[in-house]
Image 1 (cartoon, one colour):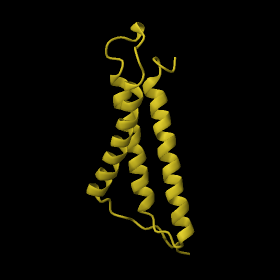
Image 2 (image 1 turned 30 degrees about the vertical axis):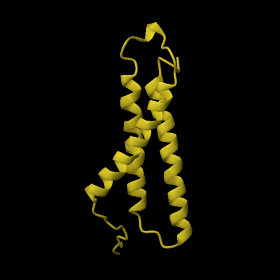
Image 3 (image 1 turned 45 degrees about the horizontal axis):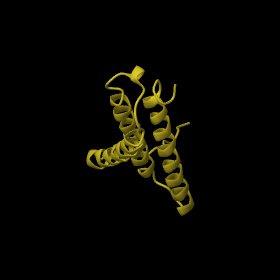
Length: 112
């Protein structure tokens, strides 16, 4: 008895992947920058360079959300509903990833 392998291998288009990751990182950087600029005076206990951590972690989370979006969109969906559900799932994962990155980046400062 032989088994059929129905898996499809899609080549990774690095330019498109990098573009989506950069877009996700840019969205994360803009959102955390707006949040940090409107934050007001920081607590002196946090140190001088407390903003560096969220400015690194949140764009990284956005970049991972962009990579997830790329890999979801590479899948071959047979009907339109599956494609729409995949796009909605991709957006939800991106938002949750940004939220978790924000919490992780601001842990010890605003989320103490």
